[in-house]
Length: 80
Image (cartoon, rainbow, N blue to C red; front, top):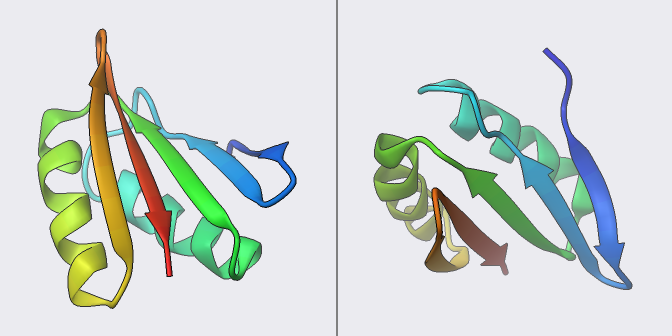
């Protein structure tokens, strides 16, 4: 499996984890956060448990998180 991470703005990256089920969205998100450093990471997922659980895990690790439902998927915006 490849990390579908791309830069979409000056300080913003997007990680597409659609089609993946737990625990892969969390694993990919943690790998991407290490790569992007202090930049904003937007994770796109179509897995309801990931949309529910990922923000909880990240908040416990000290991240700021916003989640928005967009049609058939969620966009989870993460920053320090």
